[in-house]
Image 1 (cartoon, rainbow, N blue to C red):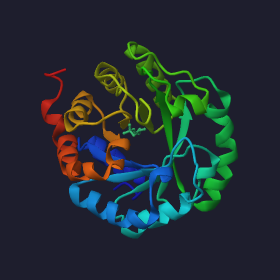
Image 2: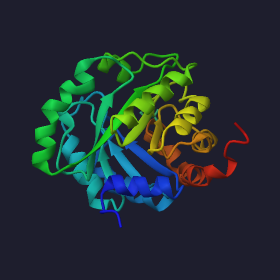
Image 3: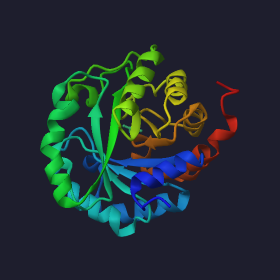
Length: 258
Ligand code: 1GP
C-alpha cells in the first residue's frame, strides 16, 4: 500500500479514475473567521481538497488563513505558493511549482533553491509540479507577476511537449493554468492532448465558472479541477454541490462529446 501522503492520495484518485474537485482560497480575499464554516460547507458539498495561496499577498494573514482552514478540514490543504512568502508548516503539502511554460530561471529553479531548505526544515510534503500558464485574452496576475510567457491557446502540441518533458524530468503533477479570474479557461483539446501523452495526475484551473465547463475539463482528462473566483461570491456557494457532482460524474461524458 502507498504511504499516506497528499500526493499518493492524488495519485490513487488518478489511477482509480476518480476526478477531484479542489477549491482555491486566496488569502487576500478571505476572512479567517469565516473560513472554518466555509470549509465545512464545501466538504459537505463534496469538495476534495483546498489550495491556498495566490500570486500577490496584500494582507499579512496567510498562516492565520491556513490555521483557520485546518480547524475544519478533513481533506488535504495544500499551499499554492505565489512566492517564498507563502511557505508554512500549517499545511499538509506544498505544490513545488516550476513554471515550465516560461523561460524565467527564477521561476524554473531560482526560487526553489531558496524554498527547499525551509520546506525540508518544516517537514512539509513538496509535490513537484510542472506548471504551465496558458494564454487567454487578458494578461493574468500569474503571468504578469512571474515574467513567464504563456503557451498559445491554439497550440495544444506545445503544452503536450512541455508536459511530457515535465514527466521525464520526474515531476509528479502537471498543472494547466489559465489564471485566476481569466476570461477563458484552458482549451479542451489542449487538456486532451496533454492527457494522451502523459500518465501523471493533471490539474486544470482558471476561468471555470459553470458545472458544465468543469465537467468538460474532466471529460477531456483533467484529474483535478480547481475553482477559486466563482466561489468568492457568497451567493454562489449554493452551487458547490452542482460543481462537485459535475466533476465527480464528468468522466461519463468522456471524449465522445469532444
Ligand atoms: C486555479 O487560478 C485558478 O488554478 C483558479 O482560477 O479563480 O478563475 O477559478 P479561478
